[in-house]
Image (cartoon, rainbow, N blue to C red):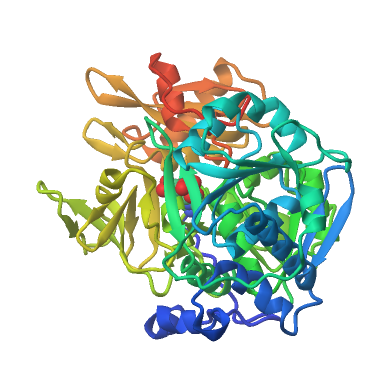
Length: 587
Ligand code: 6R9
């Protein structure tokens, strides 16, 4: 790992919310965090949509820009908090008018269009359980999720409906209402569906949110396992306390911020931080309908005066491919904080941020199951590139090993690898896997939630990601984290991306094999392969360095950008590929 530590200078123009980690950690309490939200009037409980929308629309931020939508082909639509409150109330009235009750499940299958954001928040007002799906899913993954979640309402676009859903209707007896967004502004007219725009016009713009218990179900997000069906992680309204607190502490939101979370709400990052967290802070969010395009992204960061940017390592690596010169063609005078999640952020990428933007990239770690950021590099804290940072104040994280009887034993010595565990009790912890209590129970040992990730904690309290428990390689008695090997390969000028697996070996149990995608201008061939093998061996030593390297055009990734190492392995070994519903097409 890179030895350099990025030492932060004390307060720049804007003082960080978390100025001293130790102090905030000692003083933080979830009860106090809860009190920085409003709660529903007259003791009506806690509802995400009230905290995200109505309380601002009823207060001094009513005319503040909440959401600026950038369409694929140049259209721009702006919504103030007042606009958002009226539109989301209309949708809540649409649901109520259709007889959709609190607790019923509403799915939204759409690209990043304003209706997605409005219907998710509107459904939360009606106290429905909401599940946003990736619009790129094919019919089968859509069917699996709607069936597992017993979806009674689906909001989608006319074209997605024709292509993907119409043929499934007979197999979805629970699905009572399909509401369509027109692709061209006209009225939709598919049999068995309703036109959303018409319903919205007819619905009233005022809606009173009913009493909401903080433990009422609110959001449902599916996450893929190695095998079997996707798991539906259930989150409750109380999660908003963590969404809000992490916005302040980990993403350093200030009231003047323009925030851009590049994630799609089909991935939990795009819901917790693309919808809920920034709105609870009353700040402006940018939503881009378009797909990744380095030049477009630089333009958005610059023209929209983005001040806080939350993205993923895969996007950072794609931008790195184009070189820092591309970034230097733009000015980013407003940008002051960059964060990333989803995968380990290679030290190279942290440092590239400094070259391209004059700012390091702050890695943070969490999962669909944790609902919000749990470990982070904070604005005021020194960064050790390659580390995920320190636990969120209010979150107790530890490295544990599982004893023979399954009990989790905390490892107190530093730098020892074990499973990353979190002590129960933070508000956005998932409350179950849909219809799978057994699987839920297996995630816990006493007070500890076991994450399935392997990590280390160093003597300064920084956490270092090693790999997912199922990705870790065992070679000649050494445990080898694929991330460490990938990061070393990434330091080579020809390498754009690397994915590393363990390949069964009769002598060593497993040997390390790397798949490498090259930057433009480099040619795959024997000479480069030898060069890379030597380069890795010099950095990592013979025990850890890959023995084999294959060149590959691009690595298989999930739609949220995670390298699917298990798929590289299955393909290498000719094994069944397992659940590939989240695989990004073309990889
Ligand atoms: C938010 C999200 C969770 C898994 C997690 C881990 C990996 C996420 C990471 C990271 C290393 C980071 N992961 N952030 N690994 N460093 N900063 O990604 O949720 O899609 O459920 O994935 O992603 O393996 O367990 P989800």
